[in-house]
Length: 155
Image (cartoon, one colour):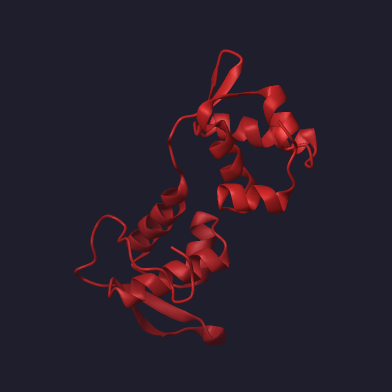
C-alpha cells in the first residue's frame, strides 16, 4: 500500500475532514500498521488520537487486530442539539445557540438560514449590535427539519 498526501485523500474520499477519511478508510477493516502507512504524511500522534476519538464515538470499532467502521454517522448530532436548544429557548440569537451548544458561528448561521427559508423560525426583531433575534414558529416540528442547503453550498 502506498502513502498518500492530503490532496489525494481528499479526491479519494471526497472530503477534507480527516476523521471522515479515517472512517471511510476503515470501512473494510484495517490494522494499525495499514492506517499508519496510509496516513503517513500526518503525525502518528494525530492519527492515533483521531482513531481513539472515533472508537469512543463508536464510528469505528476494534475487531481483534482490525479497526472497522460501524456505519454510525454523527453529522446530524450537532444540528439536532442546535434545534433542541432553539426549541427550549423559544426566542434566541445565534450567539445564544452557540453558547448553549458549543457550535461554531458558521454552523449556527447556516442552520438558521435553512430554518428561516423553511418557515420553521422567523426573525422576531433586532437586538443590540445588529444581532437578529429569532423566534420559533408555532407550527415548528418537534424533530429537527431537514432543509435544503444554502445556495452555492454542496449537499
